[in-house]
Length: 171
Image 1 (cartoon, rainbow, N blue to C red):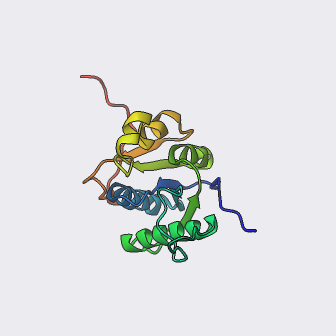
Image 2 (image 1 turned 120 degrees about the vertical axis):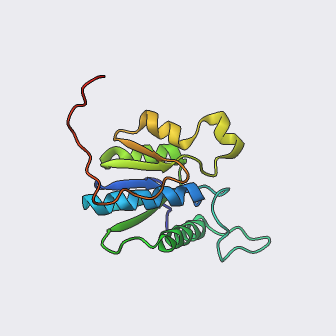
Image 3 (image 1 turned 45 degrees about the vertical axis):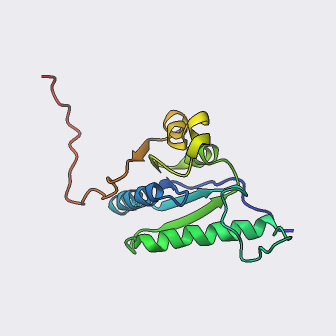
């Protein structure tokens, strides 16, 4: 019997959480730009549950498909989102789907990541207000730097932008 993935382990790179929302798509574009500029792999993670997964092709009234069918539907949807993003072909992209809560799975996957990127608003809804958003949990608990991409800011920095690391004297 096949089992679904319940944990994602990445080997470095730019890790981005994607829940299928427009904010997640913007975070994907921003993360891909960073990955392209730094030569790092792009690791795209979608966490899911039965209530957040798209309906599998095998679904029909009176029949609940196995979890592996739901996992395949989630992977297909994630791969579609990545394809629609039209990312630079030079960026090495790896997609992962994990049957686990989003914040916990991203924080665990970030253990070996160079940076974690998340959108500011996803599909959290009212439950997200009660429990705290995924981005908030990641900012407070991830073991690596975290970038939260706000809506309308997904355009990645151009390669010509140089960030100075010199200290700026106080005014």
